[in-house]
Image (tube, rainbow, N blue to C red; front, top):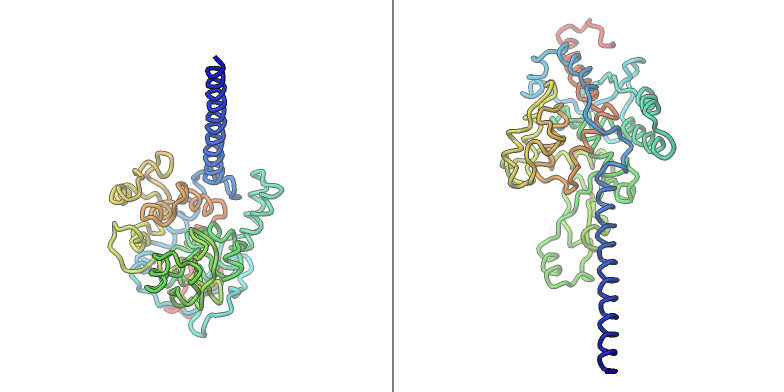
Length: 366
């Protein structure tokens, strides 16, 4: 009889332990799920959520610029300026982008309608306050500081300035991430392990890995060790933020086969500035098996979206990021901070440059 009581006691103890363990495991998964939702629901970003009609102002401006200028831009009929500077539309005073690494040569002055004070006022009107407003100010400062180099990359390589800046804001936390501050790496570009490094990794000789085992590409000048997927991961290191932008552009414009994962060069000619709403369905279907996203999955059932939202979806289609809402974060950043204005203003500057070259007496200020 005693042995039966002891057996029942053991069973009760085991059952209690099992259910306690099950409860803890469920709690762990719930915490991970909530954390994932917390991150992917955009709560960490100082943005206004949702696609709006604000870009229509840019569409009207583009109609004034004309399709000829847009076609010439995408067909590489404009000369490439070695230097791009930004001027206030109101003051007309050119303000050099604070990179410090432009070479001398032709300069394109972009008179921009982007206005930091107006955007800050808009966000306050939307209820931004406290930490969220403080972060928004940081984002605005970052845009103001680096818009010149983003415009340069767009003028030279067609990568949208709006997309470039939104990605940098997101991936570097407006330049405040530990990787960005330590290495000027704004986009988390990794250095690749050499053949020798791959052998060490295969043997799990991780302690034998050093910086010389990793390959970086120009304009990177070295590597920075930081834990990402592995404690031995190395990231490329740059002398300037502008060099980081240039390296990022290399990745987004490299020759590749459209439809393959990691191929982004098709985005810039497919989703052109100047379109009102573009349909992302065709490319979404092409990439659907690789991305796991149907055309209607990107923007809550919408398949016709502003060009920059389609471009953001294109990055997601081709596997740029693992975050399930990466494309939405990029699109909402562009709308919140009105980065589409920079795309439009660059085309306006190119048209003005053409007018000035054919009629030197034309007034180049606005």
